[in-house]
Length: 86
Image 1 (cartoon, helix red, strand yellow):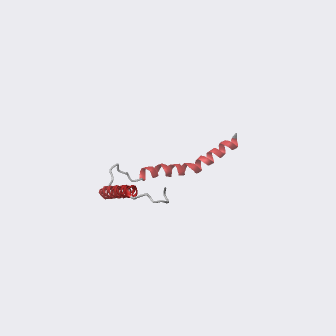
Image 2 (image 1 turned 90 degrees about the vertical axis):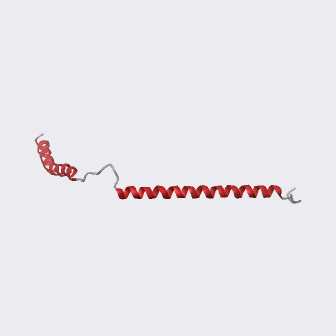
Image 3 (image 1 turned 120 degrees about the horizontal axis):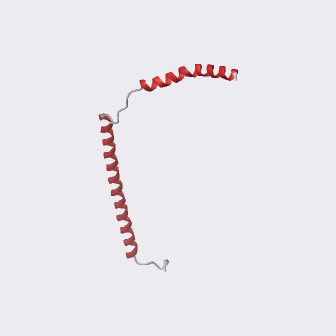
């Protein structure tokens, strides 16, 4: 039991300065505000605008593709059937 108590005292003497340093580091950290800075807000706004522009362009491309597919299917229906297809 005496060895265990001596080991505990040595261990706590070694760990204690580390624990104190860890505790004081918490107090030394800069305060992080909940509100983003003006620069970050401006960048997020530009990203949102870019994403919206891309979404609009993708929808435009999809509509053009649907229109082209519809034209192609109508053209195939209006063509006379060849003898090989019968």
